[in-house]
Image (cartoon, rainbow, N blue to C red):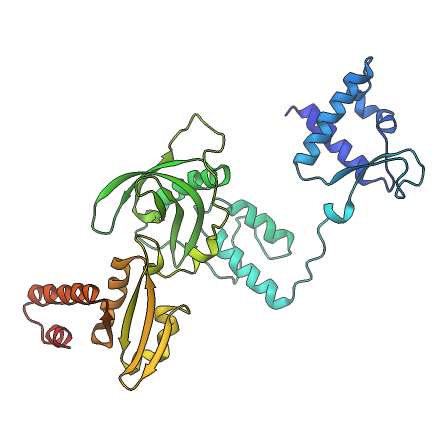
Length: 349
């Protein structure tokens, strides 16, 4: 868009916002800054105005036409108005506690060097009246830096590409290294990004697996656009996709296979920490034999990694194949550490 047209759009927006009644194209033409509408051929000027009007509407300006007979048109001439109630944001009216929480969340995002919306967050917090200095640092607010060893610069560069791909629905090409070290090349339709506990995650449709998958950015070897010469949308995000469900998901709930039920018997010392360890979706049952939790698992490996640190205090009862796999892991550890007494106790439990 040329500088001349940008200036004309701003002038048109200002004129419409400063009038309390519908204003017609004839009246708009009387202003010297709109000489693009003052052409020898009236139709040519009308087309220029229609293009500018469409541009404002595309930018989200609630511009509408009031016909002459409308009750909102006191002069009976008809014209254009901007719905001021829809254009101007209402006062937020946030309470001090709400402002504090918002500042903490914003500061956490702004503290990440690679966060793609960092500059926007800083400007938004400044508008809300928070104490932001020229360097964009926040006094006495929480920060959420990337964890050590996550190759901050590389992830920061990846985030710029990912943010663009999510916003414009562009398919990605990435090399992804699984927990076991296997590197695979993937094409992914990115649905959303989220940050949790020091880690960035990408959620999208994996073409290789032909299913929705969650990717740990720290294990992405390279991230680039699959079709860099094409900038039009290359996929549609499913209507039922909900990013917040992924944000709150536990590792064993991240989809890798069809979900199945796992039952775990807990030692009494773990019962007070059930929500912290297994989340609010865990189904807790108490009986004479003790307390159990039922989990819906769609990532078997993640569940095993989550259960292992608790040893005999978190015993998988069913299914039998998961129980057998955990036992096999313990036996390998026993052999590796040459029969540690503690590990022998865990295996025999």
